[in-house]
Image (cartoon, rainbow, N blue to C red; front, top):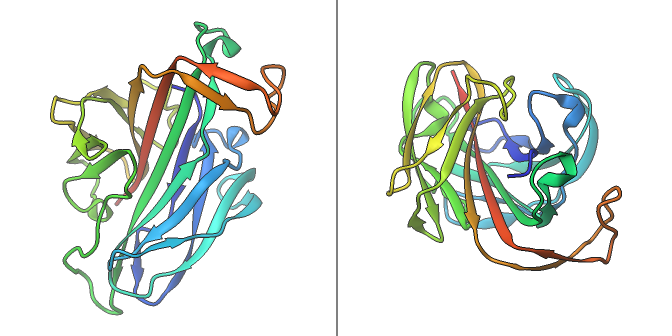
Length: 253
């Protein structure tokens, strides 16, 4: 996979009728200097009633806790109680490991990210989930229990599906201050045949759960922008494989 990841952030518990700002990032959560605004094909909010609302995004350059870095954000209002999904689809790109000293081979990258928001009536502490925890991505991570109620030291189970069918895929779960590529504390592995895996949430704070899948499919992509000395806007780029990543952001209390 490409070293960079797409992830979504949003306040995961809210009061119905309230407004909040949700965020889109691309890079490494543990290193703010590597984070920049992603190219987004689609940003949306799925409501408890099943509506899919298109979201506009604006670019920012500084955030408390991160400092000087690029990101995208969207203001949204949660009108009804229930569960919402804030979803992001990144514009397809290409990557070659040889650009940074790895094995040569151009591949297409497809990235998806989501955060789940639980909205309750004012003064109500708990509510049965209403809505969906799925964003409708081709590659989807589905929690078995409500992710917005996750507590430290709990073990949570997840399922990975591709085109709505369980699939065997790679996964990892990383706490936001860890280097997700090299920190030995990152929990990683391969799901079982039914797409199931478990994670021990042993830190309070933000976790990013990642699922990855490689497809042996070739094709071409016309570059929409230039990238250093690797290619120029308008170039026809031939790839041999497709690497798909899907992220779920959760907060542990």
